[in-house]
Image 1 (cartoon, rainbow, N blue to C red):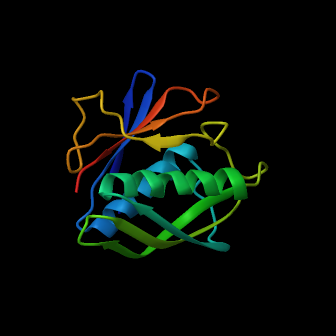
Image 2: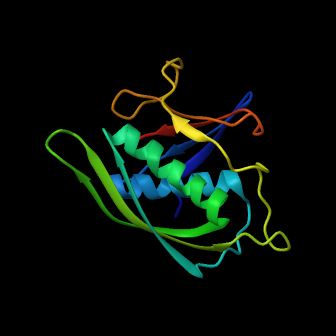
Length: 158
């Protein structure tokens, strides 16, 4: 069962994700991102890609995780079918590391449709929107390339 909800706002698209654990939260955010990118339901887990990202805190880790998924789509044309997070480690300084495997298949224009057209962009904290719920006090928003419409904002609740 998915525990995320897509949020719409003028020129924005977001994800409200919930998880009983930090691992579940990160998986739900990834599933929400996949739904924003494509409505395809026939993506097969044919290929496995290992992913390792780091962040200075949980917010930056989430930004880097979702950015890496966008990078896999852009660079490898990988449409994700499933996500398995092996570990999320937080050291005594608060630095975080995530190790995961992303399963999916190569984008096939005869079978797949991308909602956004271009998958470029990066995620960065949006400090200017006080009305969004926060994970440990920081908004998570995607600053998009000029080719993409609007902003992609992530609302995370853990």
